[in-house]
Amino acid sequence: MGNFPTIIIDFETTGLSPNMGDRPIEVGAVLLQDHKIIDRFQSLMNPGMKISTFIEEYTGISNKMIATAPPCSDVISKLASFIKQYPLVAHNASFDARFLDAELSRIKQSRKNECACSMLSARRLYQDAPNHRLETLVRYKQLKTDGTYHRALADAEMTAHLWLRMIADIKADFGVKQVTFQMMQKLGKVSKKKTAEFLKNSAI
Image (cartoon, rainbow, N blue to C red; front, side):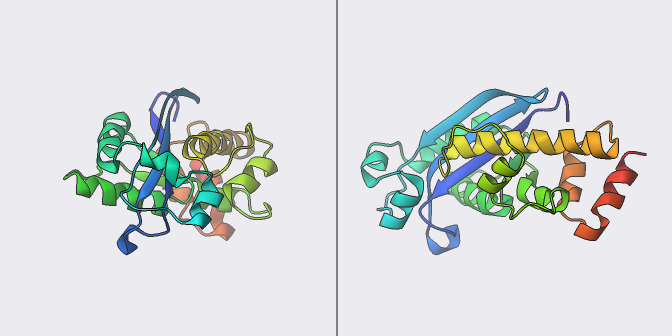
């Protein structure tokens, strides 16, 4: 994981599914290298529709804020340049990947990046956590936070800290010298009962 760059990404959106016409209203992404954040990308975006009162209250992003934001197509084009073909990590990655793919297809691009889910990995690694929402895990592992949630860059940064903690814990608890992106992908798919066995075997 050391030298290889990894992108941690988070979208705030008008709703739950691009298939239902929902679109992003903010994206945040951080570039991890050598176990630290070395670059950041953040932008509000105008989805061309009003956002609901629920989403305004949930995210703190108002219709007034997105009215002056650049259109989604402009932001996604810049985001594509930022993420290049680096591996992507998100907390509930299937959600973020769906929105990324939908927006890329609108600008005639497609994602080449592999994806891993920090939530799925955390479910295996931290089975005693009260739940596996990002804010719960941040408290559970006492990770660095400024207390902001449901804003894209803040959530991406907290997910980055969680991702790094998971890698550190795997190394410390299971004696794994090199934790690769592919290993973290596989961890999210093993059964909870077989997690310890999988990680011990990874140390061999």
